[in-house]
Image (cartoon, rainbow, N blue to C red; front, side):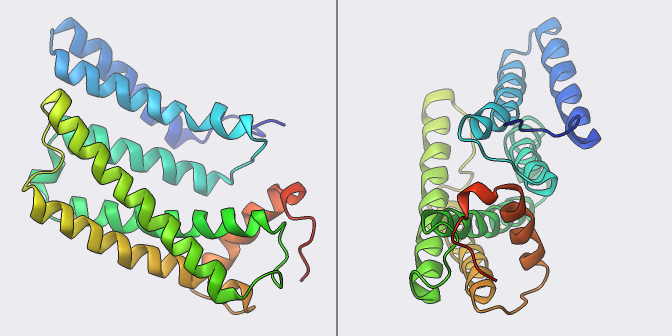
Length: 214
């Protein structure tokens, strides 16, 4: 099963081109930390394609763009160009957006386990599991930031404990909104524009939702 039904969206091509160019320039100027960050970001933004293809998952373009843009904004813009210190809201927006996204992905993951059968478990139970999954991913990201700071001498945690706790609080709020969107989806109610995003994913991956009933 192909990951892309057509060529990648132009915004992804631009991001990959920027990262590749920045890596080459950084090597030329012997800016090794910048070259490392650019190469790391490029590798992570290219990872979703073979990873999801391996599991036979087709992501809607909006999902894919969101994942790549988040990695680019977090690691490259945040670290290489110090957006975290330049813009106080940068970290908050990224964590809120990622937690919301992980909440939706967590719901889809749980919904997939039941093959799309919305009556297999109470809606609140599926939403709770999605919430827990999203918060877990957020916690693992904080561990990743701690490891990057300790091992590579970066400053992803900024103010330490205060930054970490602030991020976790934002993660919880975003995860709750994402899980709530899944809850309302199961109840057949609309919650902002999230039902259309969930429907896009389900339509592209019908083989995972054999028991889904309208």
